[in-house]
Every structure is written in structure tokens, then in C-alpha cells.
Image (tube, rainbow, N blue to C red; front, side, top):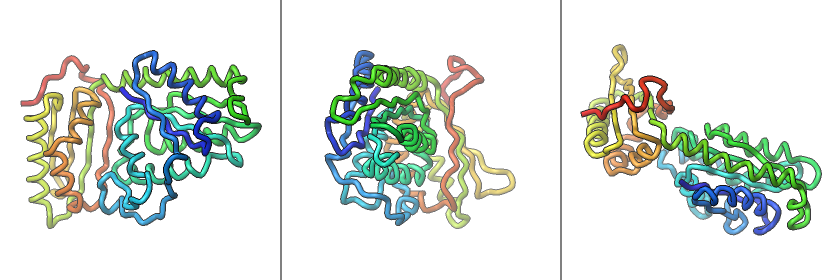
Length: 294
């Protein structure tokens, strides 16, 4: 399991870094892999609203001359996310805002691809604006349907001053609970219900492609337990998918398989709108009652 943190402070080793490291100390005691990304180290610009990510749906930003796509990969590769920012004029820094706008928009264009991860937020504040800063970062997590494990605000202006805020430091340490939530979600069975609307002129070839993907998933993925494809009884251009995986890692593996990548790249322009994807865990039947589809 991995947790990645993004430090939105222009100061690499300032108070925000200290708060993030307090979270990491607790996570590392539990054997959790951690990584901190200093947004001040590389350029990342705001979104230019070109909407190419909605056209291509390739999990990438079309603007490739900065670090946005690198950061998208880091979020996709982690199960937990920590966002940290000092308070600048009662809000997050421009660096954090650029990260939120660029990665968040690409995620929305690809069916909220950060959904069901676990997140937390930290803010270093001199006097006022801490709650609003946390709120800005939490709203990003909520917009992506990321579960919020907690938040921490600590007071300090000069480097290291947050160490004096014992209560703030304790809040930061309590964020290690996000690994408990992540671990639970990582081991529960994972299911998807997907609605697809096909362009009529591509119906037959789309159905062939999705059946190939379904067969490949059940045949070649040990932890893909079920992949059903259903055609609407009144609208032949509407399909429903029901997929069940042993856990979220099995689903993440599925999205990297050659048959899925081929299906995704081949059919992305054959639909009238983005797939509607519902993801969740099973209440019934219980996880230990499931058997693999044959």
C-alpha cells in the first residue's frame, strides 16, 4: 500500500512539510510506503479549459509541458492521498490550486478515476484562513469521491514553528488512520455497475469489442469473478455491465491488462456520452460466498 502527499508550499522544508512528515511517521510505523511531492520543484500551470481530456479520455492532460501528467500518475499509483498547503490570503497556494484543477479535470473526464481512494488534508496557518484552506482541499477530495479520513491545522509562521502547536501536531498524527480505511477498502470485494450509450452506427462493433473484453477478463484475470454484459430491452444501443473483482487491487490490475487497454482505446469514440460508473462493495451475498464465473 502507498500514500502520496503533495506539498503546495513554495518552501520545500517549511511548516507544511513538517505536518506531512508527522503523518508519514505514523504511516511508516505501520509499514505503509510513503512519498512526498514538492509542488515547488516543478512547474504546473492552471487549466486552460481546452477540453481535450474529455475528447480523448486517455487519462492524460493534453498540455504536456509541465508536471501535471506526472502527478496524475502518482495519484493513480497510490491508495491514499495527502494534500498540504500553507494559508495564502485565506486559501490554498497557487501551486495547490493548479494541481487540483489539472488533475481533477482529467479525473472527471475519465469517470472520476480517483474514486474510492482515501485522502486527508493538512494546513499551516499564521492566524486566520486555516478552515477555508482545508475546505478548499477537502472539496477537491469530495468532488472526486475520495473518502476523507481527517484533517489537521497547525499554527506557525517561521520554519519549525508548527512544532509548538501540540494539538495541531496531534491532529496530523491522527491522520494515520487513513491507512486503516484504505486497507479495509483494499481487501473488500469490489463491484462496478456501468451504463453505456453506444452510437448506433458503431453498435455491432462495440458489442463485439466489449464481449472480447469480458471474455478476456474472466479467462485471464484470476481475481475477476464476474463480468456480465446486458443489453437494454427497449434500447439496443444501451448496455449495462456488472463486474465483480476480488478486491480493488484486482480492478486496478484489470485496467492495466492488454485486452482492457485495447478495448478502451478502440471504443472511446463509439459512445454518445461518458460511461456512468457506479462502484462499491457487496452487502449481499457476503464476500466468502462468491465463486468465479466460468
